[in-house]
Amino acid sequence: AQSVAQPEDQVNVAEGNPLTVKCTYSVSGNPYLFWYVQYPNRGLQFLLKYITGDNLVKGSYGFEAEFNKSQTSFHLKKPSALVSDSALYFCAVVGMNRDDKIIFGKGTRLHILP
Amino acid sequence: DGGITQSPKYLFRKEGQNVTLSCEQNLNHDAMYWYRQDPGQGLRLIYYSQIVNDFQKGDIAEGYSVSREKKESFPLTVTSAQKNPTAFYLCASSIKGSGRAYEQYFGPGTRLTVT
Image 1 (cartoon, rainbow over the protein chains, first blue to last red):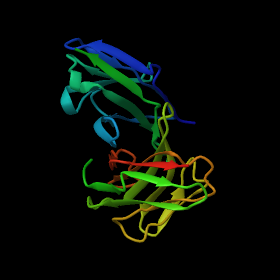
Image 2 (tube, each protein chain N blue to C red; image 1 turned 30 degrees about the vertical axis):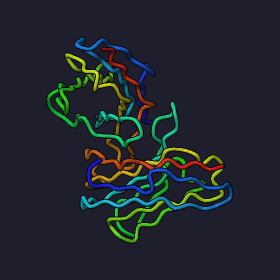
Image 3 (cartoon, chains in turn blue, brown; image 1 turned 90 degrees about the horizontal axis):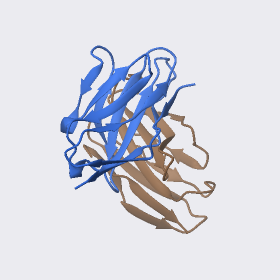
Image 4 (tube, one colour; image 1 turned 120 degrees about the horizontal axis):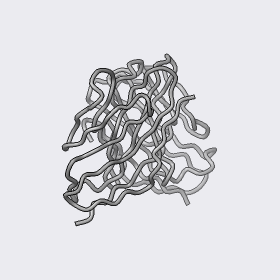
């Protein structure tokens, strides 16, 4: 069965410092991987996805993520955090089997401290 | 929140009443989804539809019903059989349901409170 894990419920980072939000996954075969962001009382917004190709994926708002097949990870990163990056971040995975549906992680709340 | 609208934003109902949540999209997407979000549990799939007049149960379909009579609309009914209906409900769409590489676009959500 496919699954995705976000091991940290909350991450605190000082403004201007680099940030990392962790995600690991388990699927049969090669995965499709996504990151979404949710601001309070809003829907989710797509940030970036990995389908194939270059392991480093760049997305919206200066975010990027690195696909690591050997570690089955897809960590979200940003070189310099902004207070406005404070939000809830979700990792999601889809396997390559026909019946596989997208599975979301439980979310990581990111706090950027001024 | 793209071209997906959900209404109302807040909804209050008495226990035992059915309630219908609206979801409309103007993105010309084939696939539409309903999720339930509870604190600390991420998103759980209730129902999804890959094409008009067809839909499938997700992981937590019990106590919910849907219809897909038009490409643009995918309303969700929360019935009195749903034992714990108070939650934040999110509707989403994607270009194709069978194309798993396609990202989903989410509406702003409806917060349902049942007392």
